[in-house]
Length: 271
Image 1 (cartoon, rainbow, N blue to C red):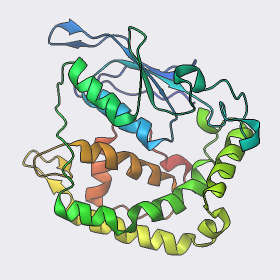
Image 2 (cartoon, rainbow, N blue to C red):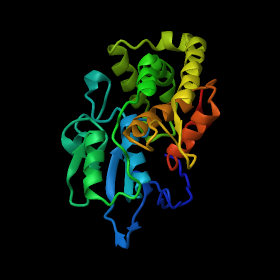
Image 3 (cartoon, rainbow, N blue to C red):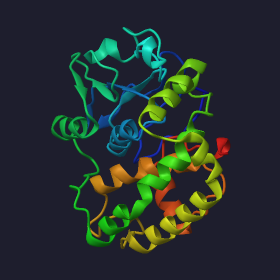
C-alpha cells in the first residue's frame, strides 16, 4: 500500500506510515502516564468489518500496527484462490479477517468481539456508546441502503490495485468468482450505475436528516454521542468514496471525514 503520512492529533495518536508486512506503525502511546502495549490488526483495507476495529483503535489512541493481506490468499484454487494454507489462515485456521493479535500472542476474531475485548483491556479515553438503532436511523438503514451500496462498490473496489488486498490479479479473480457464486451480477450492476447512483444520492440526503448534531458540533447517529452505530455505519460510507457521481450532503461528508480521520478514503481512485 502506498505511503501515507498523517499528522498526529490529540484524539488520534498516529505515528509514521510504513511499508512492510503492514502499513501503519504506532509504537508507543501514553495514556494517563501509562504506556500502552501495541496490538496487531490483521486486516483487509477494503473490509468494513476491519475498519470498525481500526476506528475504535484510533478513537481511543490504542497503539497498533496494520498487517494487510491479499484477498485471494488462503482460498483454495477450486475457488480461484491461491496459497490455500497461507494468508489469514495461518492466524486462526480460517480465511477470515479482522483478527486482533495482542502483545501476549492471543488471537481474537469478529469485529464486535474485538471491540468488546479492547473496551475491557485498555483505558478508554473517548467512550463509545452501545448500539441503539434509534428510530429514524433504523428506518433509514432498512430502506435499501445496503443493497445499493453493494451494487455500486463491488464492481469498483477491486480496481484499487494500489491496495495490498488487490495487488495480485488473482485477488480480483477470487473476489469476482466468490460474489458471482453468491448471485451478484457484475454486468448488471455496472450497466445500472446511473440509476444506482441516483438512488444512493437520495439515501445520503435522507441520512443527513437523520444524523444528530451535538452541542459541541460533533455529528453522530445517536443524540447521546458517538456509539457503535457510528462504528458500524462509517466504514460503509467510506466504501462509497470509490464511486464516481456520489453527491455528498455537507453534513454527511463532514460526518464521514471526521469519523474516519486517520483512515484513507478512496476519493482519488473513484470510478
